[in-house]
Amino acid sequence: MSSYHLMRASQLVIATHNTNKFKEFSNLIKPFGIVTISSGELKLPEPEETANTFAGNATIKAQKAAYITNLPALADDSGLCVTAINGAPGIYSSRWAGSNKDFTSAMERINNYIKDKEDRTAWFMCVLCLALPTGQTWYFEGRIDGQIVWPPRGNQGHGYDPIFQPKGEIQTFAEMTNSKKNSISHRAQAFHAFRTSCLEEHIP
Ligand code: IMP
Image (cartoon, rainbow, N blue to C red; front, side, top):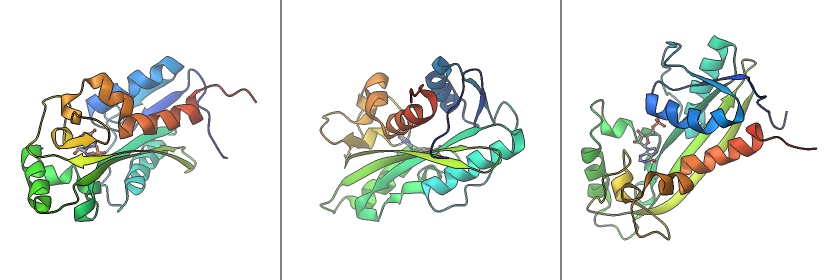
């Protein structure tokens, strides 16, 4: 099947235990008449992210939720990739901040690696996976290029936002309003691809 259309009133599991992520996706999907439920609400076990790509980890989360619930499930995996450190932290972006979510240390770690390097380019990546209980999957990607700045600037957003300045912008993600960031971000681009393919009505 080249694409999959989610019909109005159908149910979709958002495979996340993060309530903010669930709210963000629900708000984007609800206008299309889809009923969203989170794997957190359903008390599904949180699978281990053992793959070595964003798509691989998104697949693990989406397929697990789809099998258990017998419903279509959507999962995302995202992270910051820094060119001068071979794309790190990448899929380990969350893990670099440790269990106490210390992004100040994680940002310092990035700066320590690249402070003497000329190349400060980086990109944020987001891959969405839609999985059916049959095991079928579809992928939607978003990427935004930019550079690492130091010191960190701004106090909006989350994670690595204060050190990431998108190409062509003078503000970091953390200096932008939410609506500005949400109009250009890697997640917004991936969601746009998903929406175009799976939510909007296509007239043949
Ligand atoms: P995930 O929830 O497993 O996809 O982990 C994503 C991790 O990547 C987050 O914990 C952040 O560290 C980082 N990340 C992803 N998107 C963003 C963003 O928009 N701003 C800042 N950090 C992000």
